[in-house]
Image (tube, rainbow, N blue to C red; front, top):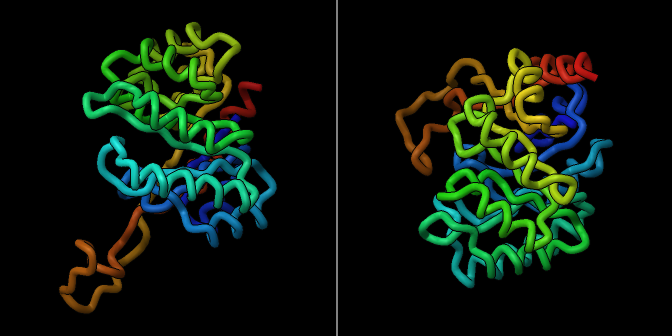
Length: 242
């Protein structure tokens, strides 16, 4: 299973054409992903033929959410479900990095019956094994992780430990700079059956004519976008592995 993270309708179409078998739909990847708009959810779900899991995160920054944040997240989950999403991707941490049990439980309950993926916030937890145990008790179906490392390949041994601990009760998804050149080694070392990736490239030339900042950036400057060819190479590598 190749899950590709996308943030626009164009990226969604390119990812599926390149071989993605599931999409994680986010907004604002410059902030590591936030909740996409209802319109984008509907457009992606209508125009792609693969499962679409929707990120639920009301803002960038940390993963410790207030009661008001949680209210928004539960409303967004209901919106994603109504739009036809196939799964929810979310999660919450305590200030010290441990799993926020109460908040995550409410998110999982709000997502039902959709499968719930706890995202890479787990990589900030001080004890990954303990965090996984907590998520198992909450009924989390999938956990996306780099093994607490800078990339999934660097964290491969830790991911392998989580796969063994999870057994058949939960799916561990390896994510974090996953690329075609090393995906075979990653799978061999971890025994994961699902990988997550967002290979990117910068867009072309700048079209900025004035030195004006809008929201901390200059509109028209080159930006990061999905590298469809890297997705295709990754998909082909996985096909070779069978």
